[in-house]
Length: 341
Image 1 (cartoon, rainbow, N blue to C red):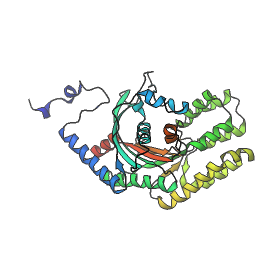
Image 2 (cartoon, rainbow, N blue to C red):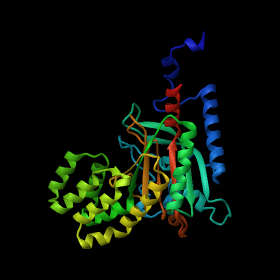
Image 3 (cartoon, rainbow, N blue to C red):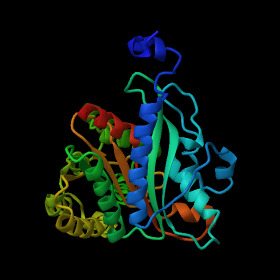
Image 4 (cartoon, helix red, strand yellow):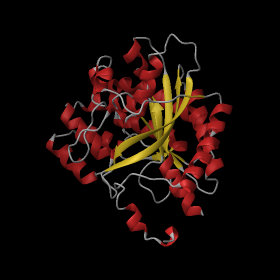
């Protein structure tokens, strides 16, 4: 029987939803794509590392603080536990920390598969090939911008006819605002969820239940308003109007850092559509500064994400070391490439 005429459904019925079997042509295309990524990363001074297929939770628990331990075994929407591979940055930092006595390049990249929960699509769990870049030892503005420049080069080489918008948040700044609001842990988790999903009705209901003051309601309203990064000075002025002098003192360092970053960003990267969204609180477990996500038109899921995590390396070694990185899902890139054919 001619395989080309065989119904797709009969070929796919044995493959679990959300997982992939790549045939010869698809495998060749993926290999070529990964090779082009490798060449770009190597030219930019990054070295490849290889991650384990899985890792034992207790190898993390013996090192990590309680705040980060929750990342090890998370639950999907159905209540099932997911393995440590749910977060590959943990794998990278732990592996490099174990080799802290080696004199090796601290700018690294990797290709690794992970399983992620994805209830919004037809499968609750999906296999994802993640492409990641991590810098251990630096996370200043220059380093973070340089990583996004690499990401832009990669994008232009792969999908020159497709643009993305990058959305920035800042975990330390958000934490400071949570302290000002004074909500407990359970309330904060709900606030975090409703802000991230822009669920205004639930936010209003939650604030009413907690008897939120008028001034604190204005803080929440400011968190809900994404703005262009070129308008960041207006955001600062709004914060100065809403907060008291004592409250401004709590966020001043982070706010000045944000303003300073976008002064550099808007000069060097003004060709990239970019937005400041103070409610972008994707993960507060180990991010310590800027976080960012990249979106393409008509896709609600981010195609890449990254940020600063200056305390994660020390949680494994006790040695302070700044760090930042990003990761993108190759599957999303391949879907867009196939649509262009």
